Image 1 (cartoon, helix red, strand yellow):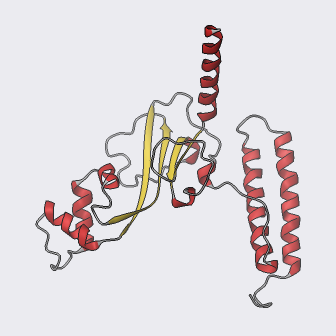
Image 2 (image 1 turned 180 degrees about the vertical axis):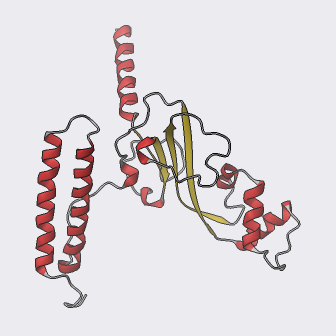
Image 3 (image 1 turned 45 degrees about the horizontal axis):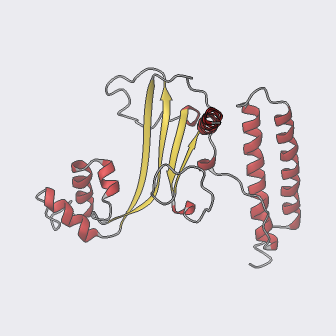
Length: 236
């Protein structure tokens, strides 16, 4: 990197001062928090994360050095929960990314379930995808993606609480418009970035890269520990 492309030292130092100020605000918010899910603590955390990330980037650009900070991403934390304690309705939001790795397999599978001419206008991969996703359930596509010439990318599943069940057709025009992270009870993420992580506290599936984040995981684990202790006491 040339000197002209490097941020000035004053900019790096200003970013360091911003981290110090964000640390003070975060500590003050923690010391004065009103409860476990105090929005002020959450806001201070985000500000500290943003300041640390900016400093880390500038430090690397100017001096080719890094910090020991590791800021948890969205898969590692959830915002304060504001939904009902006993949800009456649930919404399950799923996103799965794929790349078309083998167009020939994709077209061949589509032709097995439909009279599809790949050479016809408007056909090809575009039409084949419509045929396959119209014929098979999303979970079946996910389990057989290799057969369909698809390569998996990142995916996520959110289980969100709701108040009352939606009326039929109520949200079809904008199905994800009302997705609110603060209503999420738990989420499950799949990404290649998790594959080399030696510590994975949650393992709800054998699939590589799968992590879950639940607001109630710690409570469930604690209850399980108490049951084990009670069982030990009864045996002794």
